[in-house]
Length: 76
Figure 1 (cartoon, rainbow, N blue to C red):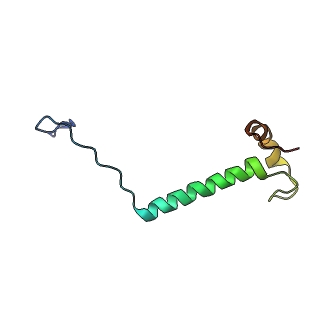
Figure 2: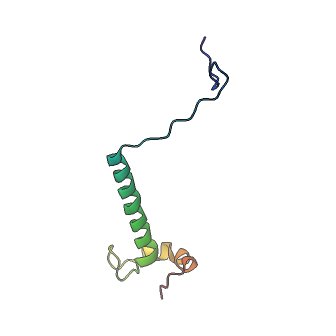
Figure 3: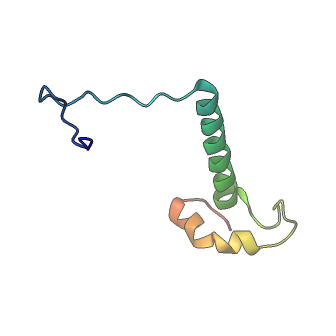
């Protein structure tokens, strides 16, 4: 039967190994987070309905309307 305790045979706790990410994976993760942040920023702060990427629909603007005012973005 294996010992599931985190204590070694000498009684000292082992040192935790740091999490090491591959550089390419880290860059892809940061790029994805930055892209998601820009998309969220566009929909909350920039989309005005008349200047929307979805045409002249006010649906996105009205969905985020109260959040825009709460965050300090002017919209009218």
